[in-house]
Length: 494
Image 1 (cartoon, helix red, strand yellow):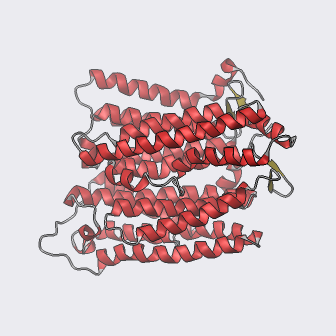
Image 2 (tube, rainbow, N blue to C red; image 1 turned 120 degrees about the horizontal axis):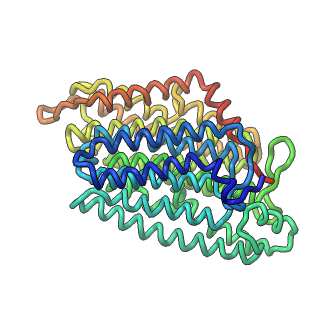
Image 3 (tube, rainbow, N blue to C red; image 1 turned 135 degrees about the vertical axis):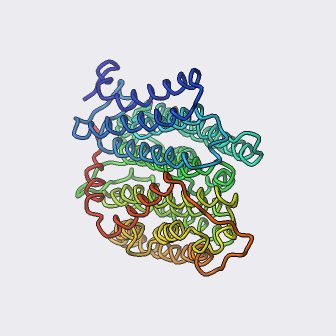
């Protein structure tokens, strides 16, 4: 199916609903005295878009808008993830004092615009569309990061984010120009056809892929494109930090898989994928995966600010997620999709506890969690322990099942991949130290008289309960989620 612009609109209504919601918020922001209704509009619009996206499952796959975008279960999966991240972050924002300082209309409009960009990242089938969608997400992310008024830390984080993003973007589009020069096309399928003919210089192609990885890696925060992450996570409003850690990263995973599998690989037998001969990008990413998880975990060991610690933790988890890509088979990709869902739940839960404590105490350092369980916050402390142990990969949490699938996909390949599995296991053990340090501070360190009590609002307590329950539920009953990721791994190629 290759549809023109008009015929493509019948499959474009999730994006149309999201676009309409953004425009409605902008208009209502101009005419409404009270801004409280804007959050309801944002929640309703995102929910309707989620429902519309769900309705497209089972639709025939194909190209939309003259091969600029693609419709298949894979793209729909990441659209659902982006919308869930947006909905949960909006919910988190209801109880966050930082967000009370910002202009509500701008905040929700830009947040949903960023989500729309993630839609395009997941469904792009053309290098030009991939670049434009990534830039849309990046530009809105810069704004969201620096949205806190008269806050030097927020402004500094936005500036650093902009500088790193500009360099990564320029490097990426330079690599894309090489691909276009070698193949004469920006379309993934036609790039694949041209490369399979074997007339392209393999060293030049490998360098072009490395340049393109600069842009994709900047979104997924793998080494050496990770340097912006700790400062941006530290300076941005905490709900936006949470949104970047799960929504932006998952969209980066989507665009990375979408490009490297249909464009520079071909389908083999038994669900395997075969890279182009002479371009060993899987082994390059294998090395990047090991370095990323190791640097992330080692850098997190001495962090005292919890947002910076979770930033380095996110870098390490980017390394874990890359494990599923380098094995070049559907089992690895399914493990990646499963882990993206699990990571969204447990990481958003951890950031929600950060918001709860910061609301009450104004502190984000680990010392601010001293005796948290004995300061009227036993439930947030228990939930935080659940999220942190899940991030470590301990049973019976969902993180254990996610890492099990990733490790199993790697070990099944044998050979060099055994080394990757060993490095990943060692890194999981290292991560236990800094996660357990937080748990120890919450439960075993007794509070001092100056430590403030911590209370929760109904919205934050209900969301915290939902995220903690899902973290445990998917650790003991993961079958439906795994089946969903299995159904979502359906690419439309041609």
